[in-house]
Figure 1 (cartoon, rainbow, N blue to C red):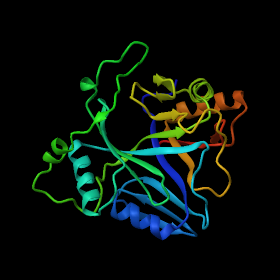
Figure 2 (tube, rainbow, N blue to C red):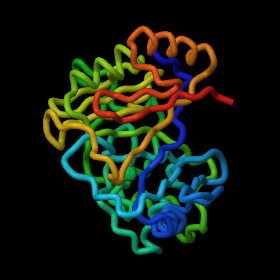
Figure 3 (cartoon, rainbow, N blue to C red):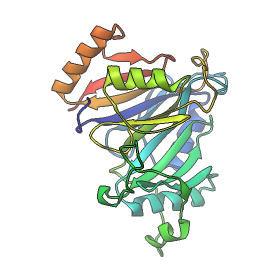
Length: 276
């Protein structure tokens, strides 16, 4: 299995208009552009890169195929999530949803290309709900108490930038089948199944609620995204040297390695990098 020291790195997204997307991520989310060259822009909250945008003019909108459901930015504290909500309100950014998942509190938005984004803060593990039978972690979805969240920062105004400790928390994918997702991401890659529904599967390392979600909400059997489509190009897993070497061995045995990257059964690429 993958180790508890695992964390996620940057997501790479195809966008149709780089200027438009940079404006959204800087103003609505509070990220900063760290580098920009040749139609590519990398954004962070002041630390490592979180989102890397690749412009492909004329890229078609996502449709009924595998790909990104959302990527999730994890805030270091509940108060920082509240400030993120203030920023969304100040910039008049539409909110797609606001949920309490027991293990976390979350806001959902979409970027200009309809790439889904979750902004969330975890509850302490000792406050996570008990798991139902057959699950490793208890999760649910109820309406978020927005007033209670905002009360944590009452009387303050959001700053221009996001929480500098912001990091990538998890990635959630549309896939064509959960059995194939469990085989690839569990048996080959080494994530552990934490919870499952008839149409969704949640996997993680180290007992986390999930580093990866997979669902069939676009339909069983959907195929890869067509070329020149907006959405997820690649996501990143960061591992220590020993875990990375062990994973390279598993990928070689499975015959799916492409350097330190691999494509899942639906052509979604994940890259494995060594921790600094």
